[in-house]
Length: 284
Image (tube, rainbow, N blue to C red; front, top):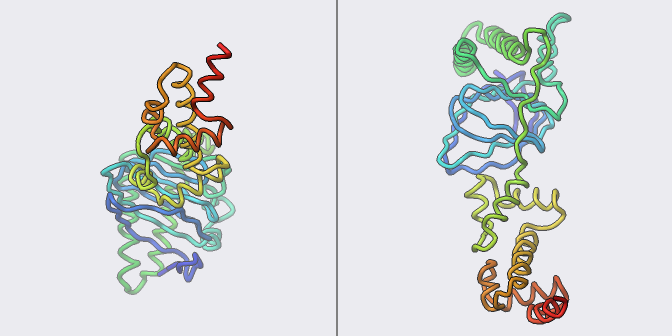
């Protein structure tokens, strides 16, 4: 049966596997040179495809095109159980006919996230077909290769039909959630006055802190640390204008000590906090 090597090069036509992830597992972004179909059996997660995201629940089907960056973000205490079917694009084209293009669900605009929700009958059919495919893939016997192709064809026909409505048009894309960058911004805006460490982002978002830092820098043009400092200084400025003593302000804004606050404030505004208070009172 089919396998893909670690570089995404196909060594056969398809590969199917059931994948379990513990609630403590972290995920790194993935990209490969083959089509992928994900059938979720359990796990309440958010799945990111490029810069878009959607909530995934049990019974959902997610279509991943080749050369597309994607990764799941689990919610706390969520165990992820899914079946992944990887397909050589040329193989899927060979299975298609002039009347039935089995590659159609993979070829839609990348501004759309291709998720379908199963009804009870579709769920039953998918379970049966995936179990049959896993069986012929792991147990070699006469006709197993032919049966494997037959099960793949049935799965592709069923899944493509799930992405069409009654008029024969592709179902509209699912709602797009906030990006991971927006979620980090919101997290910082709520907790900037606390002692925030990068490890907390791993615990909160179930992603590598290095990936989180890189994505944030790419999107915002500044590091998470710099953004956090900006938020703290903005709040400090508001408190100083309200007349709060300097020795209390830095404690309310998440700075570990006055010297750190002082250096950041001078670097940002060119004057010390006390000089700012004096100038502000004069202007009033």
